[in-house]
Amino acid sequence: MAWTYDASDLDKTTATGRRNVVRLLVGDTNTSDQQVQDEEIVFSLSETNNNVYSAAGWVARTISGKYSRQVTIGLDDQLTAEYSVLSSNYALLADRLEYQGKKTSGSMGMIGGGISKTDVDAVRQNSDRVTPAFRKDQFSNLSDLFTYYDPND
Image 1: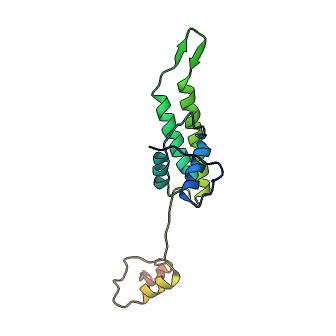
Image 2 (image 1 turned 180 degrees about the horizontal axis):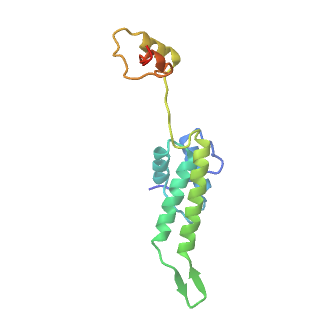
Image 3 (image 1 turned 45 degrees about the horizontal axis):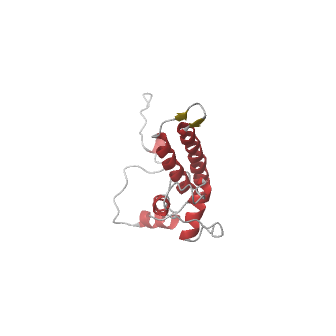
């Protein structure tokens, strides 16, 4: 497993640059206090379509999970390690990064597709096509559908 960080390469168009950006966003830039491995960041990027903010949120949530498993440790009321606070802070960071990822992705988690008007017109003109059971404005002129009975006639 590898751990690398290069502050001079924060280019989101390259794989190494994206990895460095994710590390920067989660604060995992200290060689002597490594939080996640390169392979884990690469995996998070692949899971989020290379969106660095979403990947960083994924990584921050992973780090939060790691610290949530550890208990608070106190030594003679002199030194205390509050892992629950660290876990909560990473969870809050994950929320912010995931929100940023949704803002920068161009979609809010939904993808919609469509067809062109030309395609619709071509399908409607196809004489071999099954007639649809309903269509737009099919009830717009109800007088054509009913014969009214007038008791005075």
